[in-house]
Length: 300
Image (cartoon, rainbow, N blue to C red; front, side, top):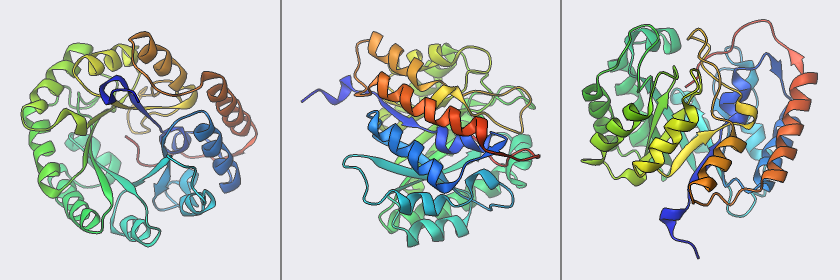
């Protein structure tokens, strides 16, 4: 047995955040194959899709069928789903989803572009869903987009982030996700915010979703580890981003994250050769899928 503190968990998000930002559609069967290949590589936490309006986000159409197609689940693999509203929550409840993710932007401008409502109303709606989900026994990540700055508004007050986190924890969120949606964060920003949150929130609850827009992604991951964070989102080939922020493209690539984490002396339990097989499968499908001619919807 290894010490929990020596293990860093990577949640693979290419099959949600990644695909959502691609201009090609993958079938349900193709997405199931990619998810299974990711699990075969040793990733034990995979964001398999989002329960959203398929007319708005066609890349996520059939996410419920993807989840059902993964039965029986691989032992030890934890599947998560992003939801935006009560309709998505209803689907999650009906399918006995283990864990959902609900994100709210800290930026008023980004919030309106992303969900057509302001931050306060989005937070109220999210907290209602969190309470209902946790009462039903579903784990919930209460996530904050633009947690480290906004392309439109500039720096975001850390006081505001701390207040939003407190709201999520009060509503019963089992995890907190901090998303560097714009890629504006630098290592000192990660350290400062995590240290502030640790005074009232167990660091075990905190996860980071980092973008590599300006080349700081891996350095920010390292800063997160130094601050005690042990859960990060990553994506095969670094695909993903935010369609509402110009140039904000690219999650941390999973293979690069694995290399850095293990160089720092931590465990991921991920096999790089099998990971490259999963990436090859995904790349192949993205190069041959059906192209769409409009930008995808919501992202973190």
